[in-house]
Length: 309
Image (cartoon, rainbow, N blue to C red; front, top):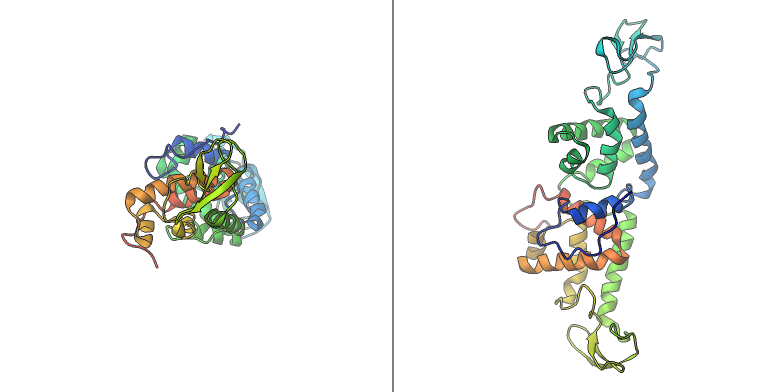
């Protein structure tokens, strides 16, 4: 059973990599194929099934000459062999189900499907190695082998997946793009909203003034003053005019230093903004949080010294 989604990301005092327990719990609770485009999800499921069933299936032809005149030579367990061995009556070559595939040298096949499933969820190779009890070297070897096997299985899935494994900025899926547009629209609305009920009592209110940051109100019931950001994660965050651009840079994977250089913000400010915006998105747009965490940690291995153009 997946762990419950944590209630806040405000506990992050450093950039949120997947080494944080809260982040791991959040990613485990998300749908496993959510990060992929909807059109590629059937192929992704099929590839998981392929990894799970291939080691125990039987070949249909010789990998050397493509002849279908093949026969079982040595059952699994013979002389310590892990898989059934076959021979070709035409070319006399011996082989097994993995011969001639990128997976031929891999072991622990019962962990192949879980490894790829965790990868689809956005986990790093290092964390997956810890989850499954394999070495980091084995995890990196599996990554290369599965990428090559994916190219043979489905070219479109492989092309998209390969593009999104680099340290370069990647395009959002249509679903993530729609969520981002909705989130930006909500941020824009917060700047111009002129009718908000009291966040403390829920009663109607009277507008008292419009400041540079946000419209302010005074509650008829408790007489407390508040604005459109009161009791939200974005309370006391300045520079509302930068929020839409900041949000897009954050979601697509730019780091604090890169965002600060682009928008003219200090390191401490971008650190605070990241925590607050993740918390703001979590309630209504968890997909954006999922995407942000994946892109952020995927690109953490190589951060340019200056802003990209």
